[in-house]
Length: 382
Image (cartoon, rainbow, N blue to C red; front, side):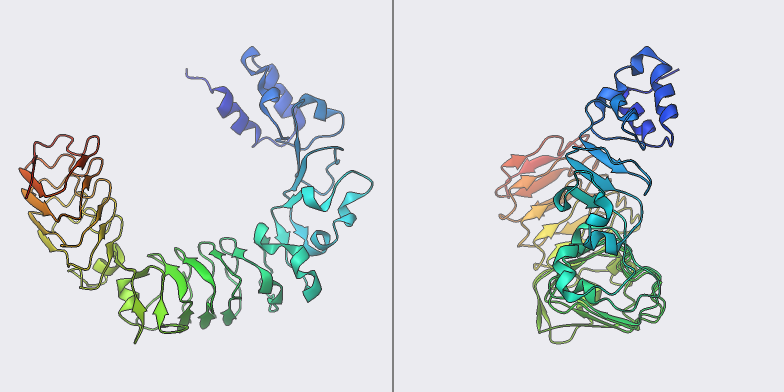
């Protein structure tokens, strides 16, 4: 029977609740005798006495409010839910131990009160995973925040929200389950709006983007009922084609075409698209040919992966970059020609393209490892 290695045993320790369980795990086999030496933190709650079991401990994790605080640690990480008032006034936690504001880290802060403006900079919300009460209506403390953790507003009753200009990073599923949310304004914040941001937002009608936002696929913005606009007349981030085409009088230089665009009815890549998203046409077994417009400069990883019926691809004259395994397992593809702007065929680009005979290109000077794995095609100068 296969046994767990030392690293796996460390992971097991993190799921144990009591000190005696960790001790018994060490005593069960001589192979585990050095396990405590591998920890630079405590995987379970410790006391001054049991702390000796972890001689190299430098960081103390506090798992409950009743955990004994060990003196002279490099860092203290509080993992249990903690009210924001303790974050604003760490002396409430210190007692007489050597804990300073600089070496405390919180990972589950409960935002349960209105925070005075003069204390916002002390709060450093951007460093926390914050548990937001569902009935909280005053979000003024976020005026100085720079990032929000995943699901920050999930299942909240808010109806509208405007982001501060300081915001730089948004977590996934940010407004997931906000069934009463009608309007969101990203103002002049920056950062990528990520997957499932608006999942379950059935009342959503207006989203106003920042010029500095990017959008990923599957943000779940229903363009049939949601009006998407921009603060200004230009957006500098990456935007999926299906959303870009609904915005009037807006300039965007980073329009991409993704699987969601194809599934929503766009069967050919429109002119103006700059890049084909990773996995865009992946496993579309009935796709037979594709004309890539000259506006496209990049084909993403696995873009045409396993398009088993694909026989012809007309490549953009301005293409510059091809992704990993972009045409892998395209078994019926026989020939393809790249413009002079392409000089690299990446790893496994044409893996198992069994019918491929020639790949033409004037400047194909860099053929990476396994680019033609199980493929007999020849590279020919166009």
